[in-house]
Length: 241
Image (cartoon, rainbow, N blue to C red):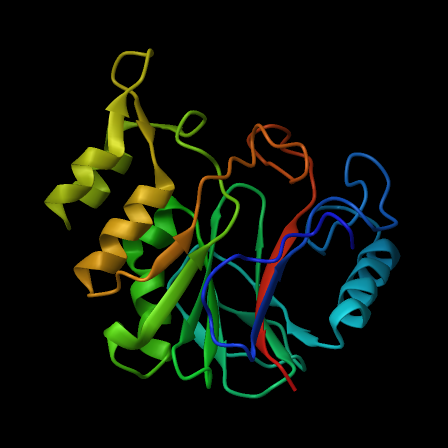
């Protein structure tokens, strides 16, 4: 579709990726129009048609997950909907898929172009270690890993309480720089992209690309914080057949 995003990063040629937007589907308001989430009270027929359009656009088999803000990472399997927040594959044509509407989608690959992975990282999953778990699923040296960070809530829109800051700083003190005081006393504005980069860097991953989006202010994307009754877009990564 014309306004879907193709990540701009130096991944190996056979590594393909895409981020859908709200455009190109059949769902009606407030899910208009390419809602891919089957758990948001949209009509199932519309969701299935939207997913079919995505599948046909790239001739891929997306492996959908039932995301729970945890750290479980599974091998991508289009034949089942696993309860997990990350998936990996080395099979061409199977797409690791992260559905979001403010949470951070992170796409991974190795430099050899033989394995890819995707993670869904809200702040709870990020603090619990979902990026680290996804990194481990690549089964390679961290220096050989590349990551692209997709559209998520931006630092000007992500207000959190002190418990969120504490959850990160207790584990990695340098993450304190990802929080700045909000105009509301006792609250902080959090930079989820910086948090992800710092945690990946702590594991030796420095080839990190993407970021700089804000789903709350960019109308191309669904945003739960902007409108709690909304759809989900997808970030996908796969190996070319």
